Amino acid sequence: MQVVRAYSNIVGAASLLRVAVSPYVRLPSALLIYLLLVAVTCLAPRANALDLQTFTPWADNNRLVSVMGAQSSDSGECAIGSYVTQSQKPLRFTTEAGQQLDHGLRNLNTAFAMASCGIGANLTLLANLPVHWISGAPMASTQESKTTKAALGDTHLLLRWTLLNRDIPYQGGSFALAPYIVVPRNRASQIAGMSLNTLSEGQTAAGGQIIYDYFFTARHYVAANLGYHHRQTQTFLGTKVGPESRMALGYSYLLDAVSGFHSYFEWQRRQSLGPDKGNQLLSSSEWQVGLGAKPFGDHLAIFTGAGKGLGGGFGTPVQRLFAGIEWTISKPAPPLKAFEETELDLVVLNAQKESGSVQLQLRASKRKDIAFTLRTSAGGTVLSGKVKSSGPTLNSIPPGVYTIEVQARGYMKKSQTLVITPGITSVIEVTPQKAGDLLLVSRLAVPGIQFETKKAIIKPESFTDLDRLAKVMRDSQAIQLLAIEGHTDNVGQRERNVNLSAARANAVENYLIDKGVDPRRLTTKGIGPDSPAVANDSAAGRAKNRRVEFVIRAVATAH
Image (cartoon, rainbow, N blue to C red; front, side):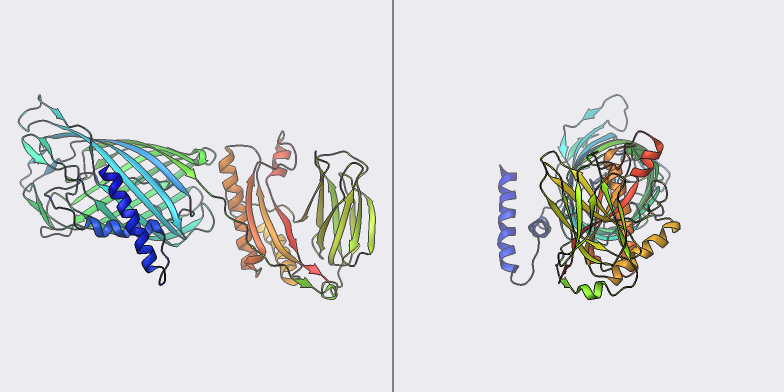
């Protein structure tokens, strides 16, 4: 009840604070709660204690475990996770005289509860709460042992502010700043006749990290964290300790793109900045290696591994085993870009001397009675005929905005506005629906965009086709919104295929923007294997389904 009452008080105070500052600055409620916790916990009582466990995991959809990534979570994207670790002799260190001291501690077992959530533009709030079990024996004996009951450790709250976000998944770098606080739990454990508060800092601590990560390729990923951890000077086991500098480096290699199976290596170092900078208690380095996988795309991640310290000191057990799981519980879909319809003069559209062409395609049907009529924006008939699976293709048509009408016995008449441009064929796909409706989709017939295998990197042989499309978009404003849709075959895990198709669509969008196309006229979507053009029962069919399509979503109104 006290925890619930305290939380209610914090939320209420945050609401009042938000009302007070709203005329001057707009802040998310979660950020205000975070700032209030900083203020409240600064009044927490002090104690002579240190946290043994600096190896802290986060639920942040990262390829590494404790070395954080800088990529922000989308607003409303939330993840939870659990992580367990077993460390042997966590308080063992060597004195200046060469004597090894264990201080009676034999094992430190910890289970972490982790959570994260995107709370705004490039802001992610992360939390970590550990539960500890420790065992030990008197230093003079190896027979008698004692195990404590489960006890809560310090709560870590971290706010990741991404300044440079990654535009394309698994490509390029991102940069972030991450302030954090440590909310203490003052509980001592009697081990070897000593009262050791090994589960807590014993006082409020705070710090911050500079985070950078980078994908050299879709398989090679690195991340670096450089931080400062502040605590007031205290004495523990006869040694004065205070603030620390912390550094972490990590590398991950993707072994299999379908399952997300990857390996990783991490190295961490902490250096005391207190009165006794050369003490053996805090000058420590440690490393860990492990394997991870994402069998259900980015929604589920599992990982395991082992680590060992390079020197003596806190947070540097002789050896450590760990395993964890993470689940993304919500991931909102990005909204389509907004657009404004405008009017264009047909004289401008028809000023070009080159002609264009339009191709009609009948999909998922063998009907022979679907008729079409191509009309100008003024209503005059240009051509008419029947729609078949093989066409027809209408050539030598003046560029401009047209209307195509499609009708068949038992179906409602449908019409679609289309743009005919020189240099690129416009395609109208007609698909009969079960409810007596005819589905019309208008797109541009750009030759298949080639990508490097399992990557979102466009091959140079596709640059000419994209340059031609960019020129069409720049020369005529008739196409007001063009959707770039990525598709894959059905080989491998669906979620990963969707992510890959979205990354490839984003790569094409970025290319067109670099060539001068207004980004407000472009939108992207990763469809993955959900809309195959042909059956996936052959290598040739699967190759046809690995494609990028350019669907016209909005056309200017001509007058």
